[in-house]
Length: 343
Image (tube, rainbow, N blue to C red; front, side):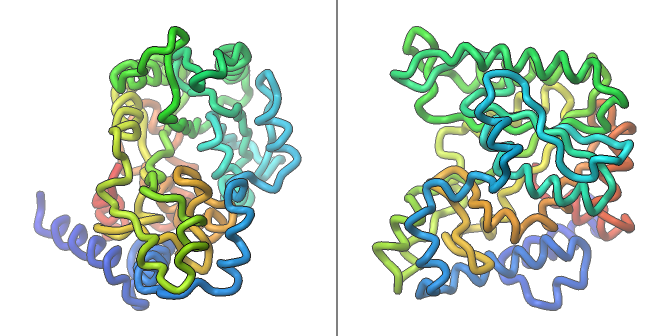
């Protein structure tokens, strides 16, 4: 590793931990701002009135306030929701389950700002990977495989060809096989590789959006119980992927030569993850981002996605323009700051 890379890596790590206000003038300013918010969240002691008001509805706070997205995620087939700049000639597709749905409005905002259309395909509790699972005790959802196959068919015929397909899937702890057996991490990873390899064969560049840390407690319940002692509601970063589910998902994407955007820096310092940042509760339940916090972080999310432009991945040339637009002017400092981020 070159000395310059080491220096930038250390600087970015320091920004995540202490995040001085002046850091917002360096590379990746939105990410540095969020790092400051996250670091400040670790020093909070008492919940504000607005944070306390969020607690009763936190269970559903991840659900986007969008009739279009609500219709899409409840549909039994592939029902696209178009966001962003609907008249743009560049298209970004979002494909996944609730973990994709939770970021969809923010990706739509980025599309409006940077002149690309966002076509969203989402289905609840339905992995992108070609695997049959069920929520324990609920039986297999027969519409999941139909949804997945319909999306893949739509993408084959989509004109113009999407510049990028952003995929996201959440491995739930209560997923089991149809016979009630456990789902191995290797089977989960292999299933995602299969789907993304199909996308690549059709000429589509894919990027995995992942890394929302799982909290060791329910943040809203903890805040309700400890409104003047928020430090009790902090989770350790190293506990954010307790069963290796997210690592397995990324392994599956990497095996298919997909890019990755890991959102963990939006939630955690190098050590810990507060339950409140930027004036908002970060999590809905223990594994989704609240819509309010996603809105706070949308510019930083754009930088994370834009940083994928420094990665080598399948059909990267097709995706390069849209990814670079999210970064603005890409200097050497920006490039090396991007390379310092986790994938």
